[in-house]
Image (cartoon, rainbow, N blue to C red; front, side, top):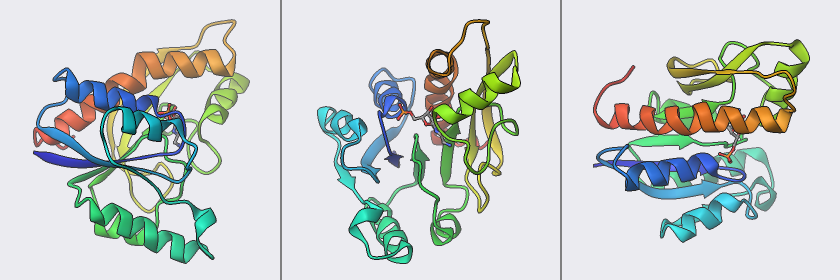
Length: 198
Ligand code: GAR
């Protein structure tokens, strides 16, 4: 059984896709040991609770500096003894010590086709605002391994999504979630659980 920890910051629709994927068998041989949020008000924590999964909040606000927060985050992850860490809308820079300790064991979902609209400052709705500003006709989502850079690790899966003429950032975000993120994130976890790396 592959033990995973899911790290979240907000609504947790990707967490929900993982919970549902495990329940309906789309993700095999995997169990969620715990959910970690940097934000105590994240609805994702409620989703964890509803599914009977242990959820903890580790917030930078509760620590005097970044270093002690980073240590607490790593300790929090270690406690669950995970085989894989899934960043599902986790809007925190992953500490280098964590990347080193869990090399090739951390994956992230990003709401664009990397290398477009990624890197520093590209997260959540901003990604879709930038895609619309640039006028791209196709966008999508990417699941990738996490390395020391921002969105620079090896790509596992990508799925394209059409941009439509009247899209707002919110409408496009929802389509990218429905047609790409909620499909490829569970699929990537299943692939890793089955021992296929890429
Ligand atoms: C998702 O669109 C995810 O791809 C994005 O945040 C959203 C979280 O939604 N992540 C990033 O932008 C990471 N750079 P959710 O909480 O409903 O899953």
